[in-house]
Length: 252
Image 1 (cartoon, one colour):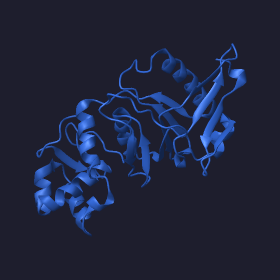
Image 2: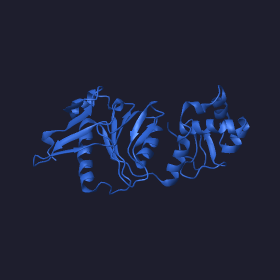
Image 3: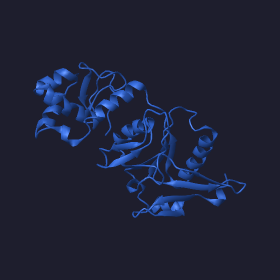
Image 4: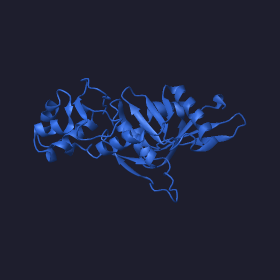
């Protein structure tokens, strides 16, 4: 890649007009996490899952998602306490190769971090997805991010069990699942020491009322459990920061 030619960014302004700007300038001034997709996610005939919207617990807004793999990665980032903003396909990068040919790529995901830096990412369903063009683009976009102190990654698919657990907990991410006043505090107190999920829920009250609050707290990382094994009624749950056998820490 001809680094001397630099990178350009194309994005939509608040009134939907396409803007092209020097990448380094755009990265410093544009709130990409607030922008719509610069181009629509493609609809691929025959696929079981097409483009849709993900409601983000981080931002309280919808994020465009183009595939099941991307939705799964959105779930992970939506729980990450270091992520403050999310967007789907908000920017197209342009660059020239040494022969003067123009290339472009639209990363699938944008995630703003608490320190102001950002992650651009693609969510391939398998390591070779997109072929040689995707691999070449990945190298170029990674360099564009390095130039400004950001990060680019091709995010690998999650383990099936972890993905299934996240999908279950994501169903309880909305604030309404925190329940009536005082319930969340009672739930946290019930798991002040590691104990089985059903035991802690029953100690608070009717599991039908309490379990949504427990799952909400697990999603937001106030409680933790081992999400690398299937969730079940006897899984050990504890307050974030406590040690329990086999536990993986929660995030957002």
